[in-house]
Every structure is written in structure tokens, then in C-alpha cells.
Image (tube, rainbow, N blue to C red; front, side, top):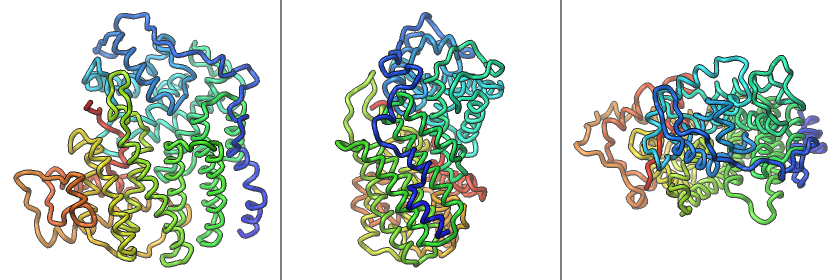
Length: 542
């Protein structure tokens, strides 16, 4: 293993990491077919129809146009698998993609001209998607729809109902079948529609498949779907030859780096020195992303980079022996990263964005990808487990961690429109965890190839379960006549962990925290919490 590490140091992870972290402007140059940025068509919102319908639901074309304008402004830049947003072309070529865009906008923000739209179209839309994913082989437009649904899924009641990982697998394999990972058009025998795709559209869709499968793998602790040396080299080539937006190209490079190092860590033993050296190489490559922005480091890219770094650090932390010098050093670094992540989330949360298409600043932030909120929840759980609730941490670390947990709690609480939605439930979970005093972290290790950050979440939740079982056996809970959930200002003035130790939660909250649906043993079901439940109910305007 030492020989392999020396090769990594000398070669810079050649050829993969070198290609995926290139930061010169050629990464955004035009491709050989003439797809320069000047030839990319502009968005078009002319819909040649008076009404559009799905199932038995009929809406005016004006509502659909409003939804597409919101999508183009708030959602599309974060996942530009569509080269441009042309509502007429999408409407005529793919009803699935057309209604996916409308459903995403209606479920994650709102369409001011049609309040309550998602409730009307939810059932027929879900029926449409279930039918579409079984129509093999999938056309390009349907693959794009699935990718969008992975980034902004529909609301579900439990994590086991979340189809994002399934949709990602279908999209990736359908893309491979169409040959999107190779230059040139799809083989004639595999064509599935009359839609005339351009080389840039094919490449943008393949990069979307790579990006989506990458962040889902990271957040779920599952093996990388697209992570071979040739696959990563192809991704790097696409970024160099095609005019991919600078921001999205950086996000793709980030996932390429994480995929590369995830493969490396899957073949290492529990050697703290070797793992630390590999993490040093990881830091160097991630710093390469920042060097592409000498003037200003975009906050969202910095946020995503830090979350990815924390996941990789967590992978090593869960493998190393408790008390080892390398592990303690890594915990200190992770502590600083976690504080920075929550700081960035708090800055974004308090931004006063100008109104866009009738949407308030709060509604606009509903367009953030699910990975954003999952990253925030993972960071909060990390702080709770290793610092705020860790008896081995210093008093200063416990207090500083608790203060940032309060900030995270207030963010989730503010996005909740009712106590039982996803944001409200994650806030309730953190409230329950914060009522526990410091505990001793057990020395149990995770085997090589374990699920890293997911393991940290599982242990944090199981500690809460054990603590709850202990206290519940001592004294039964009496439902109060009136539920009281602390506000942010009250949390600051309460105990160091942000919640009154004497507070009694309402019966619904206790059911959400302690029912079997949250504490089942299977890997995902053990984490069947709202922050692993990346769907969100429609936001309410301020």
C-alpha cells in the first residue's frame, strides 16, 4: 500500500485526477462540432396552445408558461441538462419532461398564478412517471426528466418510498444504451423518438447522469455508479470540449474527484497514516477547484465542496481507532469544516433576494437541490455526535457546536410550513437529540468499504433511540394540552444544547421521533428521517 501511495504522490492521481481537476479556460471551450456558446439557442416561452392537460386536470397555458419561467430562472442553472428551455419543443416532444418541470416548480416553490397546483396534478403526474420509466428503451427527454426528479424529488411519506436512487440507475443505464457516454449520435437501431438531439444535448445529459449518480452515491453511502478510469477520463474530456456552464462544470469536477478518491479508499486498510496522506491529496485536488475562481469563491460551490470533504473525512473517521492521533487531528479539521458549512447555510438563509416572478426570497430558496439540505443535516448530526453531545469534547467545543446546531435547527424550522412536513420533522429530530446530555462515544469501527457519513448518521440516531428508551422506561410521557416548540430566540437563552431539558413534545412529534418507521434496522430505514427524506412539501409564500 505504501508503494501505491508513493505513486499517487508522484503522479498526482494520473490520469484521472489530473484531468478532472483541470482549471484552465479550455474546460469551457467549444466542441469540434461548432457548439460554441454563441450558437446555444435562447430560452423560448411561446406555447401554441390555450390549455394543457394531464389526466383529468386541465390548466391554462399561461400557468404552464409561468412555471417554465420560474424553472429557467431558479432551477435550470443548477442542473443544465437542457441546453435551453424551449417550452414549445418540450411540449411537443415529451409530455413527461413537460409535466416534470411543472410538477417540480409547483412542489418545491409555488406558481403564483395557480396556488395549490401541485395538489391537483400530483396523482396523474405520478401515474405518468410510473408508466414512462417502464417504456424501454427510454428516450433522451425522459432521461432528462428522471435526472431532474433525482435532484428535486416529489414529496414522500417515508424514505423507502423515495425513488431517486432507482431513477438514477434507470437514467444511467438508459444513457449507456443510447451511447450518450460516447461521441456521435445514437445507433439508429436504438432510437426511441423523433426528437433531433444535438451533440451538446447528449453530452449535457451524460454529465447530468454522472453528477446525479455521484451525489446520490455520496449521500447514501453506496458504491459509485460511474467511477472507472475511462469513465472519469471521458467526463474530463467532455468538460474540455463542450461549452458547459462554468458553475455546473465545477460541480461535475467535484463529483469526479470524490468518485476517484472513493475508489481509492475502498481498497485501503485501516492505516491512519496512509489515510491521512490520501486525504492530503484530496485536499490538494479540491483546492484546485477554488483556484478557478481567483476573485470570488461561489458560496454554493464552496458549500458543496466542504460537504463532500466532510463526507470523505467521515469515511476515515469511522474506520480509525478511537483515540488515535490521526483520528483526533481529523476530527479537529472536520470541526472547522462543519462550522463553516453551517455558517454558509445561515448566510444564504438570511439573504434578502429580490422578488422573482412573484416569488419571495424564502420561496426562491426552495429551488435548492435536495443535496443541499441533506448536506446541512449530515453536518448537524456530525456536530451533535462528535462535539455537542460528546463527553470527550472540550466545553468550548461543545458550546460552539451547540450554537451552530441551533443555527441549523432554525434554518430547517423556518422552511417548515407545518410540523409534520419534511423540514418540520428534521427540526423536531434535532430538538429531541439536543435534549440529551453529553455521552461517551463508543469505539465500534466500521469495516473498510463501509458507508462513511451514513454510518455517522446511524450511530447518532441510535444513540438518541437508546437515550429515549432509557428515559421512557423511567417515566411515561404525558401529552401536554398545548404543544410548545422553542423559537430561535428561546433556544439561545436555554441550555447549551438549545432545547429545554424539561420540554415535553406533543404526541404527534413523539410519534414522528420514536415510531418504528424511523428506527427500523435496514440501512436506509434506520435513517428514515426527514433529512434523509430529501423531498419537500410545497412552500408557502411569505
